[in-house]
Image (cartoon, rainbow, N blue to C red):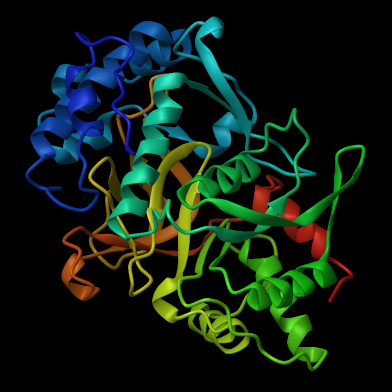
Length: 388
């Protein structure tokens, strides 16, 4: 079901095509370093030629793509901070080539405005296709019910999280869909906790596999309320799948340890631990990072991850905490090929996980500093205030 895609310019972006064509998400990371470096040089040249802002940024740092010789040299490529996109719109393609426009925030807060040409969004979606295939989650023969812990959308919605969760419904035929954050009119949303609990019970009774996607805070809150009300645990189909995303940002007082959360899901819904996964990503960097069976975020072949010191930005070694820095050549629509996130993280050797995947993995340790910027998860968490 994975489609073949073509870069916008097959001569200027040949290595980009080659890297994004890699089909095994977690094999060959080191073997493909030379190809990856060439792809990053190509896409950096692309943005320098196509985006006036990025051209000036590179000139201000006296950067030349030809100076990139090895993996560590990727750090010299002019980067942007994720929060830059909350205040600036910069394009590397003509407006007529914009295929999709997504925003990062929900009902409140500053919004990242991210624009995709067809190659970029299709390329990111293909990565998700390949990871879902890798884990055996593509089941066209098996209908599923869906519970989406995300925003019910209007037809004109540009919200990235809702777009992603609805996109994920393509991997198994839809029987019924329940969306937990209901539209209230005028673009507002309200968390339907009791409706969510009813969906747990109804879908367990139906006996079809259930796929639960979206913000963990809402999922946890519904399970917690279910338990407080003395509602008996249900047993969902063993092929049910939990795939969460968005984190607990802005609602740390309600966050619980991941293992405790997964144990609660197993207890109340009967879904096996290996079918409980979290995902990490953002509209600013759409490469998917998906938990392995041991619940670690391994780096796929289409990206490289560095950890940067919060004061000097020097690269840090395994297990040291700093800013999370994503590098990937997949994006041609905007100069977001080297993005430093606002997340604190650490990188770890593949051997220390034990799941068998041969690529490094990172762990998130929270947000760096204090900011007024609100992500989708933060905006969503505000809907929980007063409901617990």
